Amino acid sequence: MSSDRRGLLSAALASISAALALGATPARAAAQSSTPDKRKVVYHLADLDKVAFVLGNIQNHFDGMGGPDKVTIALVIHGPALRAFHATSANPDVKQRVAKYAGAGVQLTACGKTMAAQEVTLKDLLPGFVAADEGGVVRIAELQSQGYVYLRP
Image (cartoon, rainbow, N blue to C red):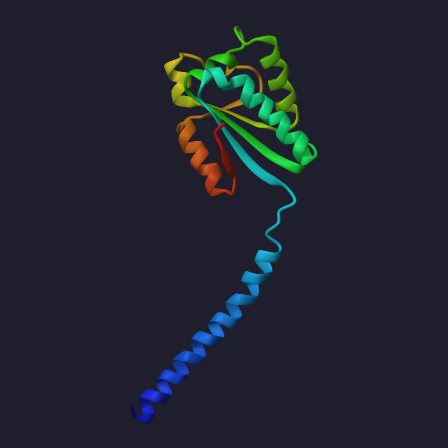
């Protein structure tokens, strides 16, 4: 190998080593500080027969984490499960839990496509809901890209 090639190879290796060394320090710092103060979770609810179960899981999540100030929870509802959250037909337990969770900061999202299929608007749902016009599954994917852990009980 000629001395010119060796010099280029040495320079390239030195540059790569320097770049890796510079990149490693911020990466290590990020890894050490990656323990967030507040976890983020998105619950996916589509099955009508799982409404009470999922609402119970949200309470268990709050209890297990030490309260709503320790975790950010989003609940995205689509399909048949949305019927349980219609204001005129929701059972008292669902109404109570939804009001409690909305007050605790749970992000309540209804799939806009399901709303259209069920011919309801936000006014027809329990208070606290927002619509995901692009669709519930799209909203779930967005939340996952923001670091939310996905749970579908």
